[in-house]
Length: 68
Image (cartoon, rainbow, N blue to C red):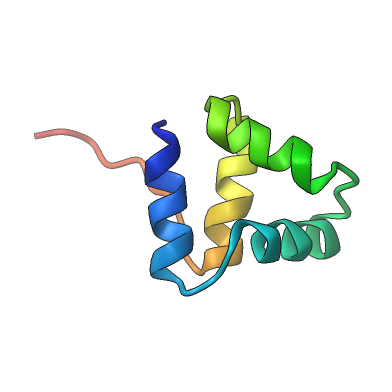
């Protein structure tokens, strides 16, 4: 997933990567650093469950929809 895609949703929600990281840490008991999290976003190495957690924090859900 392109890094600008994730960053775009973060910006659209009027928040920052730092705030998302803070909320992820509190809600999901994560212990990674902001630097590590930012690097994962920039290098596009987020795990699927991390993307789901980010979506949740931002108020979104990811759905699989069958193509027609």
